[in-house]
Structure formats: structure tokens, C-alpha cells
Length: 220
Length: 220
DNA sequence: ACATCAGATTGGTCCTTATTGGTTCGGATT
DNA sequence: AATCCGAACCAATAAGGACCAATCTGATGT
Image 1 (spheres, rainbow over the protein chains, first blue to last red):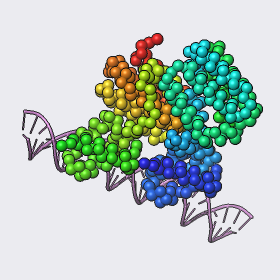
Image 2 (spheres, each protein chain N blue to C red; image 1 turned 90 degrees about the horizontal axis):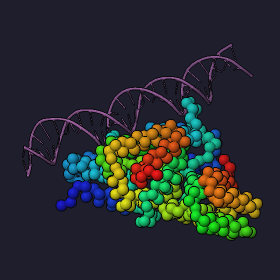
Image 3 (spheres, rainbow over the protein chains, first blue to last red; image 1 turned 45 degrees about the vertical axis):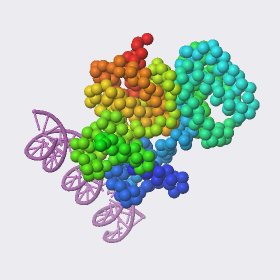
Image 4 (cartoon, helix red, strand yellow; image 1 turned 45 degrees about the horizontal axis):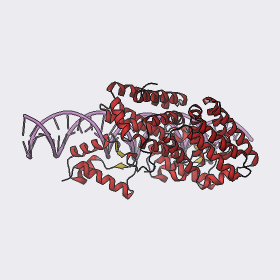
């Protein structure tokens, strides 16, 4: 079942991509949308209400409804085609608290594994290699939480990270300087883990992921 | 001789497999089903009542009866040996920040879904029924985050929650008083969502889950 | 060139009617 | 005697249209 809100979103998104719609453009009147989507005006108004509350459009009596300059949110996507934005959102949600957990319960052996991957990442020259150790490092930190279910969910996330879009995005935005920056942030995280400092680990992981997100998707 | 409930269930299953029915689709009105199955409306209503108790459908006066997403096939499954302690740890890690996210981006429709499940939980008399609405409520809150990957991971968690150990543990520790307590905590969470208060939603969810954890596993 | 005003346009509101799940009650069936 | 069926009725929701007030357009008059 497609909601009116959904088809309206699709309509706008298509227009923006074709260039026929941009910030400030006036979109069809409610009554015109009624004919176009063959749906009662009340439904149109409900949908526009949502878009207005999200800041996507502005409505003015006697003038019309106008697009704002807000970014169009992506429609709900199936698990198969997860967008990088979604992935980063989930990582920012999950990994910081997981790091705090790891700081509390990691064993000496865990810390050694983590240290090993950190070290290999630091000695990587080329992007592809660094990427591999980066994935291993983040996974090892999660593993230090000693929770099988958590690892299961983490791997669901990582399968999404293995998608083609993600790889090309990483490659496009990767520079040697950025690699060194990430490595230093990794080091900060691992030091907090070694110090058994949950808050420190959480914050370090968060700032790291925020940097990654900014670099991949553009600063907001 | 098959029961009305059985033929209704078959009807739905066939529709889902043919793709003509999916989560959220509206199914025929009770009066239409009366003609289609040539049985009295009371029988239809009895059958729908059962399906509703199972969480397969949602009924709303003036709107109709709708399929929920409870019938979705679960792709990734959690390992069978996941312990309740692990589950609660993950829930405490994930659900509070997800609630904060939901408070920021939930649509009006999301809030209505959430409110519906909250209401049903509050009107539940018996443990099993309350449990169903509780699951729906927590899932609806996550859904309000509008992140497909997140939902994917959430469902992995929920398959773990469907394991036998979990059910028996819940049953052993459930009392009417505790149900009322949970419901009031749920209400606090939903109010924070309605107020668009991310921190409030996060904190309310955390204290709620801490209570659940204490009740299930014993206070530490 | 400027001010003014009538008409059209458009988002917001209200009211009536139709639809739909929930409830009640008399009568039939077993 | 108990249960079930059918019908009418109730309350919540949606649909469609009429109407309102803000705004824009353009013609008119000075």
C-alpha cells in the first residue's frame, strides 16, 4: 500500500532530480494534486501537513505551497539497498555505547586483538588495505562487548557496508591525510579502552564516526 | 468442516504470497466478508478478534481492518542460545538512542500507530495479550526512526525475543501490577515522543528497560 | 505613473453524508 | 435453557463540497 505522503514525496524527489523543481519553486495547488493523484483533498492536506512539519515545504494562504531548501529525506528503503546515510546513522547510534560497554568488560586478550588491528591500520599505505583493518578494528571493539546477539546485529550492519555504493563512496573520499587522521582517532579510542574509561571511549568513537560521516556525506 | 478463522487465515496467506496483500493493506470490510464467506457477521468478528489478539491485524472504527507486519518472513535469525541477559543488554544499548531519534523524525502517522499500540496495551487484561502489544509498541517506535537497516537489526533482536526461554521467563515474572507499571512507563515514553523531546524519550526508555531488566533478571 | 478596486486564486475551515468497526436486542434454532 | 443469527443502531472516521480569508492579477480612473 502506497501512502499519499509517499507518492507526494516520490513526485517531489523526481522533480528535484530532473531539475524542474528546486528550492522556492511553487508546487501544484492542493486542488490540482487532487486531480493528479485522484485522492481526496483531505488526504493531500494530511500529507502536506507532514511535509510542512518536516520543513520540506511552506504553505501560505492565497499564495500556494513552496519547496524549501531542506534536503529531501530518502524514502523508506528495503534492507537490500541501504543508503550510506542510513548506515552512518545506525553506526552513530550503536557504536559509541558499544565502545563504552567494551571499555568495561574487555579482557586482556580482547585488547590485544584490538591493538593488533590498530597497529596494522597505522602501517597501511594504501586505501584498500587500511579499509580492511578499519573494519576489523571496529568489529573487534564490538566483539570485546562479549555479546553474541550484538555481534549478530553488528554483522547485519556490516553486510550493508559491503554493498557496492559504500565501497565507491569510500574510495572517492579517501586521501592519505584522511587515513592518518582516522588512525589517530582510532588510537584515541583504543587508549580509552585500555584506560577502562567508558565515557571516554564512547565520546572518542562518536567524534570519530561524526568525522567519517561528514567526510562521506558532506557536512550538514 | 473448517472454521471461519481457518478460511480467513488461508485467505490472508494466499494474498500475501500472491503479493496482493502486504503489511498495511486494508482487507475487506466485515460486511463484505460476510457475503464472501457466506457466514454470519458474528463469526467473522470472532475470527478477526483472534487474529487481532495475535497481532496479525489491527481494527479501527470508521476506517477498517488492516494487516500488520507481523506476518513478515524473518530472514536473519538470532542464534538459539542467546540469553535473556544478552538481549536486555542489547535492548538497553539500542532502544534509548533509537527513541531519541524517533522523537525527532516521527511523522504524525507514526505517532498514531504508536498511540494505538499504547492504548491496546493499556486495555489488555491478560499477560499474553499485553505482551503482544508491548512488542508492537517497541517496534513501532523503532519504525518511527525511518531507517530500514535499523529495522532489519531490530527484527534480528526480536527473533531472539521470540525464543522459548524468553517467553517462560516473562510469564514467570509477570503480574497485573507490573503490567500497569509498564503501561505507565510506556505512556511516559510516548508523551515524550509527542512532545518531540529526544532526551526525554531516551531517558524514559532507558528507565523503562532498566525496570524490565531488573524484573526479569533480578536487581544487580 | 500611481492608486484603487473587482475578480480570480489558494490554503484553511466547517458541515453534511457515507462508510465501517462496535454494540444491543428480539427472535429463531438447537 | 442456552446459543446463535439477523437487523438495527452507535460512534468514529473519511469524503466531498460550500464557504472564508488572505493574496495575487489586472483593469480602470485620475
